[in-house]
Amino acid sequence: NEYLQPISMGNITPSNASPDLKKVATLNTSINKFVVYGNVGDSDGTWSESSIFVEPEFSLVQKTGVPEAIKSTTYKPYPMYYYGLAGEGTNPIKGYTDKDFTQGEATITAGDPIGSSYAAIKVSGVNYGVGLLAAAVLNGDEDEVFYPTNNGGTLEGDAVGADEAIEIAGVLINGQYTKLNKTFDKAADASEGNVYEEAADVILKEKSAKIAFANNKVANANIYSVVAKTEAEKNVTMNIVFKIKQGHFIKNNSGQILGEADKDAYAFLGVILDAEKASTTEKCVFQKDFTTLLNATVTDWGNLSGEEVITTDVNLGVEIDTEWQQGTAYDVEI
Image 1 (cartoon, one colour):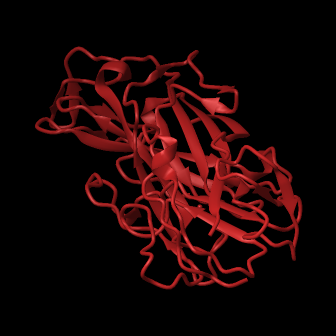
Image 2: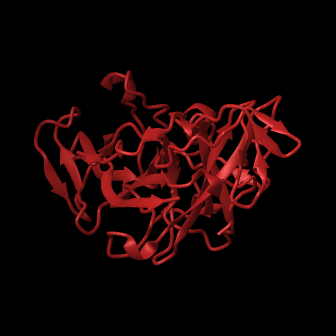
Protein backbone atom coordinates (compact mmCIF):
# COMPACT_ATOMS: atom_id res chain seq x y z
CA ASN A 1 0.00 0.00 0.00
CA GLU A 2 2.98 2.30 -0.51
CA TYR A 3 4.31 3.72 -3.75
CA LEU A 4 7.93 2.79 -4.38
CA GLN A 5 10.66 3.78 -6.81
CA PRO A 6 9.65 3.04 -10.41
CA ILE A 7 11.32 0.21 -12.28
CA SER A 8 11.43 1.78 -15.74
CA MET A 9 11.51 -0.72 -18.58
CA GLY A 10 11.67 1.89 -21.35
CA ASN A 11 9.64 1.63 -24.51
CA ILE A 12 8.25 -1.80 -25.34
CA THR A 13 7.89 -2.35 -29.08
CA PRO A 14 7.17 -5.41 -31.21
CA SER A 15 10.80 -5.47 -32.34
CA ASN A 16 12.24 -5.59 -28.81
CA ALA A 17 13.72 -8.97 -27.94
CA SER A 18 13.13 -10.49 -24.51
CA PRO A 19 16.67 -9.78 -23.15
CA ASP A 20 16.18 -6.08 -23.86
CA LEU A 21 13.26 -6.01 -21.43
CA LYS A 22 15.00 -7.55 -18.42
CA LYS A 23 16.21 -5.36 -15.61
CA VAL A 24 17.57 -5.93 -12.10
CA ALA A 25 16.18 -3.79 -9.31
CA THR A 26 15.99 -3.82 -5.53
CA LEU A 27 12.51 -4.28 -4.09
CA ASN A 28 11.09 -3.60 -0.66
CA THR A 29 11.11 -6.95 1.13
CA SER A 30 7.70 -6.39 2.74
CA ILE A 31 5.79 -6.23 -0.54
CA ASN A 32 2.79 -8.54 -0.88
CA LYS A 33 0.92 -6.72 -3.67
CA PHE A 34 2.09 -5.28 -6.97
CA VAL A 35 0.51 -2.52 -9.01
CA VAL A 36 1.82 -2.35 -12.58
CA TYR A 37 1.48 0.68 -14.86
CA GLY A 38 2.52 0.74 -18.49
CA ASN A 39 3.10 3.61 -20.94
CA VAL A 40 2.80 6.32 -18.29
CA GLY A 41 4.99 9.15 -17.04
CA ASP A 42 7.40 11.10 -19.18
CA SER A 43 7.25 11.59 -22.94
CA ASP A 44 8.98 8.26 -23.54
CA GLY A 45 6.45 6.39 -21.41
CA THR A 46 8.57 5.98 -18.27
CA TRP A 47 8.88 7.52 -14.85
CA SER A 48 12.25 8.77 -13.69
CA GLU A 49 13.84 6.27 -11.30
CA SER A 50 15.47 9.12 -9.41
CA SER A 51 12.10 10.46 -8.27
CA ILE A 52 9.72 9.13 -5.66
CA PHE A 53 6.70 7.38 -7.10
CA VAL A 54 3.64 9.08 -5.63
CA GLU A 55 0.02 8.23 -6.27
CA PRO A 56 -0.40 8.92 -9.99
CA GLU A 57 -2.93 11.02 -11.85
CA PHE A 58 -3.33 11.25 -15.62
CA SER A 59 -4.43 14.29 -17.61
CA LEU A 60 -5.48 15.01 -21.18
CA VAL A 61 -3.08 17.12 -23.22
CA GLN A 62 -4.37 19.86 -25.51
CA LYS A 63 -4.14 18.98 -29.20
CA THR A 64 -2.55 21.15 -31.88
CA GLY A 65 -3.17 21.11 -35.62
CA VAL A 66 -6.94 20.74 -35.24
CA PRO A 67 -9.06 21.98 -38.19
CA GLU A 68 -10.08 25.61 -37.69
CA ALA A 69 -13.73 24.65 -38.11
CA ILE A 70 -13.59 22.90 -34.73
CA LYS A 71 -14.22 25.83 -32.43
CA SER A 72 -14.16 24.07 -29.06
CA THR A 73 -11.00 23.34 -27.09
CA THR A 74 -9.84 19.86 -27.99
CA TYR A 75 -7.45 17.34 -26.51
CA LYS A 76 -5.38 14.42 -27.69
CA PRO A 77 -6.79 11.02 -26.72
CA TYR A 78 -5.14 9.38 -23.72
CA PRO A 79 -2.15 7.13 -24.45
CA MET A 80 -2.56 3.36 -24.51
CA TYR A 81 -2.27 2.83 -20.77
CA TYR A 82 -1.81 -0.55 -19.09
CA TYR A 83 -2.74 -1.39 -15.53
CA GLY A 84 -2.87 -4.42 -13.25
CA LEU A 85 -3.00 -5.34 -9.56
CA ALA A 86 -1.71 -8.69 -8.34
CA GLY A 87 -1.53 -10.13 -4.87
CA GLU A 88 -5.16 -10.10 -3.84
CA GLY A 89 -8.47 -11.54 -4.98
CA THR A 90 -8.35 -13.76 -8.04
CA ASN A 91 -5.04 -12.48 -9.34
CA PRO A 92 -2.18 -13.98 -7.29
CA ILE A 93 1.55 -13.37 -7.68
CA LYS A 94 3.46 -16.33 -9.12
CA GLY A 95 6.95 -17.27 -7.90
CA TYR A 96 9.62 -19.16 -9.90
CA THR A 97 12.82 -20.84 -8.79
CA ASP A 98 14.71 -19.76 -11.93
CA LYS A 99 15.02 -16.30 -13.45
CA ASP A 100 13.44 -17.18 -16.80
CA PHE A 101 9.97 -17.84 -15.35
CA THR A 102 9.93 -21.50 -16.42
CA GLN A 103 10.77 -23.62 -13.37
CA GLY A 104 9.06 -24.16 -10.02
CA GLU A 105 5.94 -22.01 -10.41
CA ALA A 106 4.02 -21.46 -7.18
CA THR A 107 1.39 -19.06 -5.94
CA ILE A 108 2.79 -16.56 -3.45
CA THR A 109 0.56 -15.54 -0.58
CA ALA A 110 1.04 -12.80 2.00
CA GLY A 111 3.86 -13.72 4.36
CA ASP A 112 5.71 -16.01 1.96
CA PRO A 113 9.40 -15.14 1.67
CA ILE A 114 10.33 -14.11 -1.84
CA GLY A 115 14.04 -13.37 -2.00
CA SER A 116 15.09 -16.56 -0.22
CA SER A 117 12.64 -18.86 -2.04
CA TYR A 118 12.30 -17.52 -5.56
CA ALA A 119 14.54 -16.09 -8.27
CA ALA A 120 11.66 -14.49 -10.12
CA ILE A 121 8.09 -13.39 -9.64
CA LYS A 122 5.49 -12.73 -12.30
CA VAL A 123 2.63 -10.25 -12.13
CA SER A 124 -0.21 -11.28 -14.45
CA GLY A 125 -3.59 -9.76 -15.13
CA VAL A 126 -2.19 -6.57 -16.66
CA ASN A 127 -4.66 -5.22 -19.20
CA TYR A 128 -5.56 -2.00 -20.95
CA GLY A 129 -6.53 0.78 -18.54
CA VAL A 130 -8.50 2.48 -21.31
CA GLY A 131 -10.96 1.52 -24.02
CA LEU A 132 -10.95 1.71 -27.80
CA LEU A 133 -13.42 3.13 -30.31
CA ALA A 134 -13.32 1.56 -33.77
CA ALA A 135 -15.64 3.30 -36.25
CA ALA A 136 -16.55 2.93 -39.90
CA VAL A 137 -18.33 5.64 -41.89
CA LEU A 138 -20.51 4.25 -44.67
CA ASN A 139 -22.12 6.05 -47.59
CA GLY A 140 -25.84 5.30 -47.57
CA ASP A 141 -26.70 8.30 -49.76
CA GLU A 142 -25.34 7.98 -53.28
CA ASP A 143 -27.19 10.99 -54.73
CA GLU A 144 -24.98 13.41 -56.67
CA VAL A 145 -25.39 16.58 -54.62
CA PHE A 146 -21.93 18.17 -54.66
CA TYR A 147 -21.42 20.86 -57.31
CA PRO A 148 -18.23 22.43 -58.72
CA THR A 149 -19.48 26.03 -58.80
CA ASN A 150 -21.16 28.35 -56.32
CA ASN A 151 -22.52 31.28 -58.33
CA GLY A 152 -23.71 33.73 -55.69
CA GLY A 153 -25.65 31.09 -53.80
CA THR A 154 -26.71 29.11 -56.88
CA LEU A 155 -24.91 25.81 -57.33
CA GLU A 156 -24.02 25.06 -60.94
CA GLY A 157 -22.25 22.45 -63.04
CA ASP A 158 -22.25 18.67 -63.15
CA ALA A 159 -22.95 17.25 -59.69
CA VAL A 160 -20.93 14.40 -58.19
CA GLY A 161 -21.47 12.11 -55.24
CA ALA A 162 -19.82 12.17 -51.83
CA ASP A 163 -17.36 9.44 -52.82
CA GLU A 164 -15.67 12.01 -55.05
CA ALA A 165 -16.24 15.15 -52.99
CA ILE A 166 -15.80 14.02 -49.36
CA GLU A 167 -13.05 12.61 -47.16
CA ILE A 168 -13.24 11.62 -43.50
CA ALA A 169 -11.09 13.92 -41.39
CA GLY A 170 -11.60 12.41 -37.94
CA VAL A 171 -13.88 12.16 -34.93
CA LEU A 172 -14.64 14.63 -32.14
CA ILE A 173 -15.64 12.75 -28.98
CA ASN A 174 -17.43 14.80 -26.34
CA GLY A 175 -17.46 14.26 -22.60
CA GLN A 176 -14.07 12.62 -22.05
CA TYR A 177 -12.75 13.23 -18.52
CA THR A 178 -9.78 15.59 -18.42
CA LYS A 179 -8.24 13.73 -15.46
CA LEU A 180 -8.09 10.06 -14.47
CA ASN A 181 -7.17 8.68 -11.06
CA LYS A 182 -4.75 5.89 -10.17
CA THR A 183 -7.13 3.18 -11.44
CA PHE A 184 -7.96 5.09 -14.66
CA ASP A 185 -11.40 6.10 -13.47
CA LYS A 186 -12.67 9.69 -13.36
CA ALA A 187 -10.58 11.82 -10.97
CA ALA A 188 -12.44 13.70 -8.24
CA ASP A 189 -11.66 17.12 -9.74
CA ALA A 190 -12.04 16.13 -13.40
CA SER A 191 -14.05 18.18 -15.86
CA GLU A 192 -15.19 17.08 -19.32
CA GLY A 193 -13.42 17.84 -22.57
CA ASN A 194 -13.55 17.02 -26.28
CA VAL A 195 -11.04 14.57 -27.75
CA TYR A 196 -10.13 14.77 -31.45
CA GLU A 197 -8.59 11.86 -33.36
CA GLU A 198 -7.66 11.88 -37.04
CA ALA A 199 -8.98 9.23 -39.40
CA ALA A 200 -6.79 6.22 -40.08
CA ASP A 201 -8.54 5.73 -43.43
CA VAL A 202 -10.11 8.81 -45.05
CA ILE A 203 -12.07 6.96 -47.77
CA LEU A 204 -15.81 6.44 -47.25
CA LYS A 205 -16.93 2.84 -47.19
CA GLU A 206 -19.71 1.34 -49.24
CA LYS A 207 -22.96 0.81 -47.38
CA SER A 208 -22.43 -2.96 -47.34
CA ALA A 209 -18.85 -2.79 -46.00
CA LYS A 210 -19.62 -2.78 -42.30
CA ILE A 211 -16.84 -3.61 -39.87
CA ALA A 212 -17.24 -6.41 -37.33
CA PHE A 213 -15.49 -8.16 -34.45
CA ALA A 214 -13.14 -11.00 -35.42
CA ASN A 215 -11.32 -12.65 -32.51
CA ASN A 216 -12.09 -9.52 -30.44
CA LYS A 217 -10.28 -7.35 -32.99
CA VAL A 218 -11.68 -4.91 -35.54
CA ALA A 219 -9.95 -4.47 -38.89
CA ASN A 220 -10.50 -1.90 -41.65
CA ALA A 221 -12.11 0.82 -39.53
CA ASN A 222 -11.94 4.43 -40.69
CA ILE A 223 -11.23 5.67 -37.16
CA TYR A 224 -9.46 4.21 -34.13
CA SER A 225 -9.34 6.25 -30.92
CA VAL A 226 -8.31 5.49 -27.36
CA VAL A 227 -11.13 6.42 -24.99
CA ALA A 228 -11.43 6.68 -21.21
CA LYS A 229 -14.15 4.72 -19.44
CA THR A 230 -17.48 6.55 -19.29
CA GLU A 231 -20.00 6.51 -16.46
CA ALA A 232 -22.75 3.95 -16.30
CA GLU A 233 -25.92 4.85 -18.21
CA LYS A 234 -24.29 7.95 -19.71
CA ASN A 235 -24.75 8.54 -23.45
CA VAL A 236 -21.78 9.60 -25.55
CA THR A 237 -22.11 12.31 -28.19
CA MET A 238 -19.59 12.78 -30.95
CA ASN A 239 -19.13 14.38 -34.34
CA ILE A 240 -17.81 12.68 -37.43
CA VAL A 241 -15.68 15.37 -39.07
CA PHE A 242 -15.58 15.46 -42.87
CA LYS A 243 -13.40 17.34 -45.31
CA ILE A 244 -15.21 18.71 -48.36
CA LYS A 245 -12.55 18.82 -51.03
CA GLN A 246 -11.62 22.14 -52.58
CA GLY A 247 -13.98 23.17 -55.40
CA HIS A 248 -16.97 21.17 -54.19
CA PHE A 249 -20.17 22.69 -52.78
CA ILE A 250 -23.37 21.37 -51.21
CA LYS A 251 -26.52 23.15 -50.00
CA ASN A 252 -27.56 21.46 -46.76
CA ASN A 253 -31.10 20.97 -45.53
CA SER A 254 -30.94 24.28 -43.67
CA GLY A 255 -30.14 26.16 -46.88
CA GLN A 256 -26.50 26.79 -45.94
CA ILE A 257 -23.93 26.31 -48.70
CA LEU A 258 -20.88 24.39 -47.53
CA GLY A 259 -17.60 24.28 -49.43
CA GLU A 260 -14.81 26.56 -50.63
CA ALA A 261 -13.46 27.38 -54.10
CA ASP A 262 -9.84 27.80 -53.03
CA LYS A 263 -9.39 25.42 -50.11
CA ASP A 264 -10.82 22.39 -48.38
CA ALA A 265 -13.78 22.94 -46.05
CA TYR A 266 -14.95 20.98 -43.02
CA ALA A 267 -18.40 19.72 -42.07
CA PHE A 268 -19.92 17.67 -39.28
CA LEU A 269 -22.50 14.96 -38.63
CA GLY A 270 -23.54 14.26 -35.06
CA VAL A 271 -23.73 10.79 -33.48
CA ILE A 272 -25.23 9.68 -30.18
CA LEU A 273 -24.21 6.35 -28.65
CA ASP A 274 -27.00 5.23 -26.33
CA ALA A 275 -25.77 3.77 -23.04
CA GLU A 276 -28.99 1.76 -22.70
CA LYS A 277 -27.87 -0.29 -25.71
CA ALA A 278 -24.50 -1.13 -24.12
CA SER A 279 -23.95 -4.87 -23.83
CA THR A 280 -22.12 -4.80 -20.49
CA THR A 281 -23.88 -4.96 -17.13
CA GLU A 282 -22.67 -1.48 -16.17
CA LYS A 283 -24.18 0.03 -19.34
CA CYS A 284 -21.00 1.97 -20.12
CA VAL A 285 -20.52 3.05 -23.75
CA PHE A 286 -16.72 2.96 -23.27
CA GLN A 287 -15.06 0.48 -20.89
CA LYS A 288 -11.48 -0.35 -19.95
CA ASP A 289 -10.01 -3.16 -22.05
CA PHE A 290 -13.09 -3.23 -24.33
CA THR A 291 -13.53 -2.16 -27.94
CA THR A 292 -16.68 -0.22 -28.80
CA LEU A 293 -17.55 -0.75 -32.46
CA LEU A 294 -19.47 1.82 -34.50
CA ASN A 295 -20.88 1.55 -38.01
CA ALA A 296 -22.20 5.02 -38.90
CA THR A 297 -24.20 5.09 -42.13
CA VAL A 298 -24.83 8.49 -43.74
CA THR A 299 -28.43 8.53 -45.00
CA ASP A 300 -28.62 12.15 -46.17
CA TRP A 301 -25.64 14.36 -46.99
CA GLY A 302 -28.01 17.31 -46.65
CA ASN A 303 -27.71 16.84 -42.88
CA LEU A 304 -24.11 18.08 -42.97
CA SER A 305 -23.49 21.03 -40.67
CA GLY A 306 -20.83 23.69 -41.00
CA GLU A 307 -20.42 23.72 -37.21
CA GLU A 308 -20.00 21.09 -34.52
CA VAL A 309 -23.21 19.35 -33.60
CA ILE A 310 -23.40 19.59 -29.81
CA THR A 311 -25.70 17.12 -28.30
CA THR A 312 -8.17 5.55 -19.47
CA ASP A 313 16.88 -8.99 -5.81
CA VAL A 314 14.47 -10.83 -7.86
CA ASN A 315 13.40 -10.56 -11.45
CA LEU A 316 9.98 -9.00 -11.86
CA GLY A 317 8.04 -10.27 -14.87
CA VAL A 318 4.94 -8.55 -16.19
CA GLU A 319 2.49 -10.46 -18.36
CA ILE A 320 0.31 -8.09 -20.40
CA ASP A 321 -2.88 -9.35 -22.00
CA THR A 322 -3.01 -7.32 -25.21
CA GLU A 323 -6.23 -8.80 -26.53
CA TRP A 324 -9.05 -6.28 -26.63
CA GLN A 325 -12.30 -7.69 -25.32
CA GLN A 326 -15.40 -7.47 -27.47
CA GLY A 327 -17.59 -4.59 -26.37
CA THR A 328 -20.77 -3.01 -27.67
CA ALA A 329 -21.44 -2.75 -31.40
CA TYR A 330 -23.45 0.29 -32.51
CA ASP A 331 -25.13 0.52 -35.91
CA VAL A 332 -26.52 4.04 -36.42
CA GLU A 333 -27.78 6.22 -39.22
CA ILE A 334 -26.57 9.82 -39.36
